Image (cartoon, rainbow, N blue to C red; front, side, top):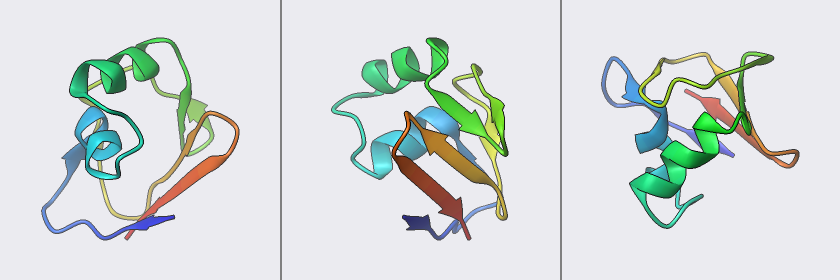
Length: 68
């Protein structure tokens, strides 16, 4: 899936929420904290990590997000 970034960045947990991958911000924060998200090939556990254009995220084993 692709996400077109309108601003300079979006916080990781907000991105998961905007894409309807979770039901709430709390669920998004839990998924990130438990290590289910990788960013550019490395596990990302910072809930408020600033995601910028050109980054690739993997949520679990099956959801790939390209940030445009």
